[in-house]
Length: 148
Ligand code: 4BW
Image 1 (cartoon, protein in one colour):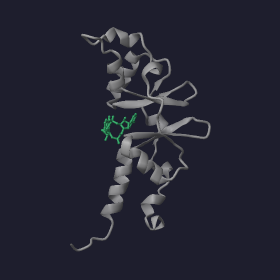
Image 2 (cartoon, rainbow, N blue to C red):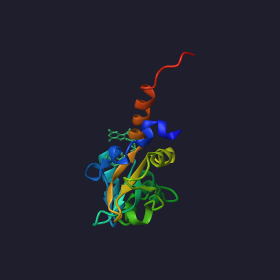
Image 3 (cartoon, rainbow, N blue to C red):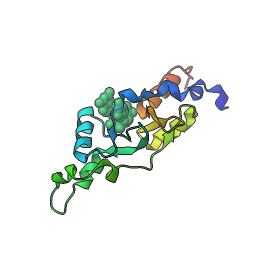
Image 4 (cartoon, helix red, strand yellow):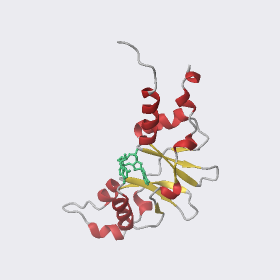
């Protein structure tokens, strides 16, 4: 039955935001630097890469702020002491651009974006919930109307 739905055959390649356009931080960067990148890019979470562009995890504003939470105040000075390696989320879903669209669709239920990597674990970009929803919307909009 799935064979009848053209949307499901969309190559993941067609949905990728290329790595060059994705804001990211590197292993070893301070939390202060990561927060700056997050605030300047406007995104709430971004990938963490190493110098070879391999994907290690993602980091969010929330994780950084939580790390600075003291008993009675935010200890913002901690942001220059700690690095992204200490707080990043390493248990993240990953896709290859050869994976099926259904896999991306399923992962985007619980993740606002999913990172794409190649066979050498080199980061290739992201697929966002927005691009998946836009594709689904175009598909449903073009379906013939049924009378109620
Ligand atoms: O700066 C922004 N520009 C645009 N065009 N849209 C934005 C921006 N910031 C937020 N948005 C919108 C998008 O619709 O708000 C949604 C939630 O953003 P988020 O999660 O919580 O920062 C955005 O939805 P989306 O495009 O489906 O993106 C889902 C998530 O993917 C974002 C962010 O964590 C990540 N992301 C998207 N584009 C990115 C990126 N991370 C780094 N670089 C990019 N270019």
